[in-house]
Length: 94
Image 1 (spheres, rainbow, N blue to C red):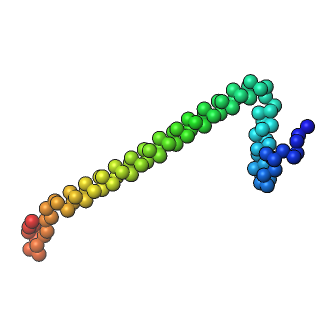
Image 2 (cartoon, one colour):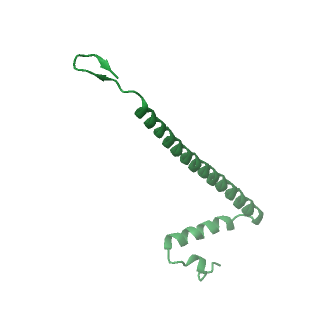
Image 3 (cartoon, helix red, strand yellow):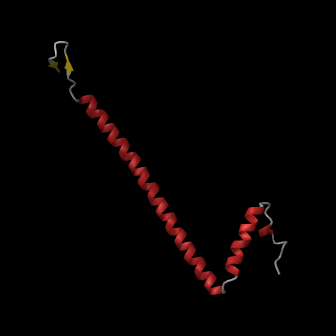
């Protein structure tokens, strides 16, 4: 029998409460050892996803900083390179 007074399923968020119950029920229908093994598998899977997400965030940060360095280098090279101009007669001068 389901304990309808369980505060875990009465948080005031109907959809959230229903999803929590369905998640609990999906593990309850399995044998205990299988449910625990599946839970460990899911935690390891999501831990791997989190690790990949953190790595991707690090790569993005490194790429942004690398872009800043390149932009600064290009800006310095652009300002220090001699500029050539064309005179009205068509001759170039420095």
